[in-house]
Amino acid sequence: MARSKLTDRQLQTMKPPEAGRLVIYDEAVPGLEFRVTPTGAKSWRLKYRVKGNATLRQESLGPYPSVTLSDARKRARDIYNAGKKGQDLIAEEKRAAEDDERSAKRPATVAKLLSRYVEEYCKTNQRRWQTVELMFSAHVEPVIGAKALDEVRRADIVELLDDLQNKKGLNAQVNRIRSQLIATFNWAVEREFLDVNPAATVKRRKNIEAPRERVLEDKELAAIWKAAASLSYPSNQLVRLLILTGQRRDEVRCLPWSEIGDDLWTLPAERNKGKRQHEVPLTTAALEVLDGATRLGPMVFTCDAEGKKPYAGMKRLKEILDRESGVTGWTIHDIRRTVATGLGRLGVAQEVIEHILNHSRPALHKTYNVHAYREEKRTALEAWARHVEGVVTGNRANVVELAERRQAT
Image 1 (cartoon, rainbow, N blue to C red):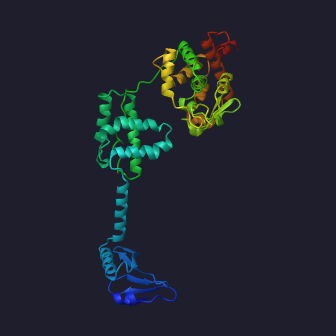
Image 2: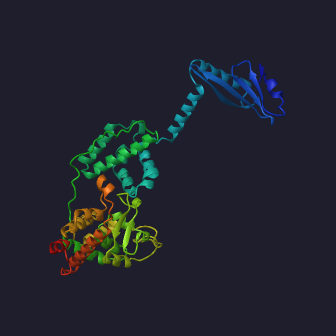
Image 3: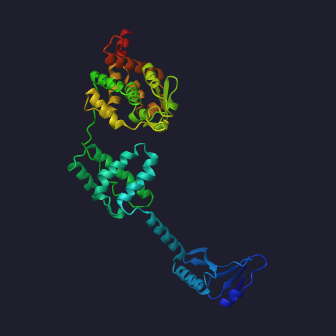
């Protein structure tokens, strides 16, 4: 490596080497190198150490003549002098640049964070992301949406929830909003938009979520069945399959034909709350319901001309069922509870009911009892279908309860 006290004229007139790279060490500043390639490209590089660390560092200072001799020497001296004091100027500048980049990407307000969380996380990972979006827009954004993100405190979250509970009179939804805010701020912390989650230690509200115990009476179930029967596809078939299978609303609503076999509905793990494959035996009555569904495309229940989108009119459907049946004070989920209760009254073992509903099981049972209960579930659902037929037609003669069968044996 050649050494020289470099001058502007020397750099301007320096000829490139025929092969290899020409490197000249500037005697005016320690570690500063001038480099020339056979193609004539000229550039600066600095070798330096930081006090207390023996590692030799290298840093490109840019091309010549864009970076002049005086610019290169000044930059090299700054880095060299900082190193003598134990500072790595290059590393500090890179960290500052990364901080600036993160700051530019960081949502400025709570409202912007909520919007990004819904767009980047909820829409990809949650089937009911619209519910979260509506929850935020109705209850959170009007109160703390304009607040700067780095100014949100635990007290702001507590005050928001207090107002929702005491002034707006919300009950169970207060805890749902709390849970969504904790999840949102956790998401922000992971992306370094925030250092800490301001909602992390906000306690769950107690005694505001009264468990639902509504079970439809036989006459109410018959009225809802008849009201559904007066409707056209897909409302008619959707409601009746909910009643006959006892499965969750969206599992039925978003049912694709691909999950239906000859007499078995196989619900994949990614499409059910239990996150495990679930088999639902299809009774004769359930198969008749499916036979009455119009095949427009991949979805069983759809209003889309191509059958690609699942039915999305549940709120309107519920209003029609209320009006036509005269049954009030119930929810679609109450059908599931009604099926479970009805199966119990028919003498079905609780373990079989739990398998029909696809409820979670204790770890020990999952490990050692891998029986699918397919035939037990089929027998129970056939008995339930006969029961439904009996209450709808008023002819109970053909309804044989499992409990009576057991007593007979």
